[in-house]
Image 1 (cartoon, rainbow, N blue to C red):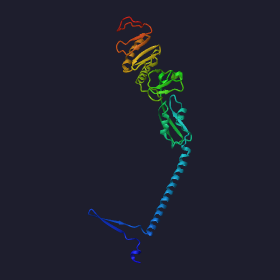
Image 2: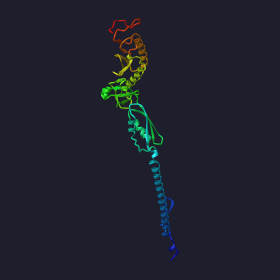
Image 3: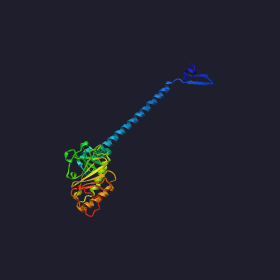
Image 4: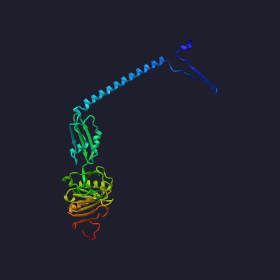
Length: 316
């Protein structure tokens, strides 16, 4: 047998072609010999064995880490919730706030998501903001700032009526409706805000009506001026888009404009000072008029020594 026939490889076939003046040579090798194929198969088996061993090692490591985490952290009683401290003041009780979090005694403080717990608390319409702290010794502290009611809001269109009707709703200084589950004497003493044209009333969300915010600012400023029983504010009514009517004890009604409250309050202070000095029983006062402010009285007023803009006889 010739030496060419005993070789491990067949001679490579060579082909050439001439195309567009360029010589192209293509070499086509036949498959390797059985010996080479056997070596490659052995190498593939070794590589597969090494890969399998690495996978087993990784799985064992993951299992050990999981068991360590579960035993040392998840089931460690040191990190389980034991007590909840709630610092707050308002209509919501401690039990209501804790119930809103959905936490139980088997809750792990280490794995607990504080952001989710805070979001649950702040979804309560009575809550303005919340801060949560954990100490990893079983204690969770909730600092909750509640919306402080400053008035009752009344609007038949939004089904908000008198406080004792069972459908009364409070409002804070930012104009956000606050549901009232328990009516106390303190809440009953708050003034009322009556606005038949209220556009919307979503619990915990400030209303968009500028008249309401103007009425709340006026309410705050008037209450800071209370110095006798006759000037105790009971109600602010919003009859239209441009005026606010403040109702005081003693049947006094003072009309303010929605805009430029400070100049109106300055004239109100001058008038009420004179009314206290002369013991006037004021019935109405209209501060919308910037000149010759009209006023009426429950009894003929003492105007001795005053220079009146209009001396014509008018009924009291």
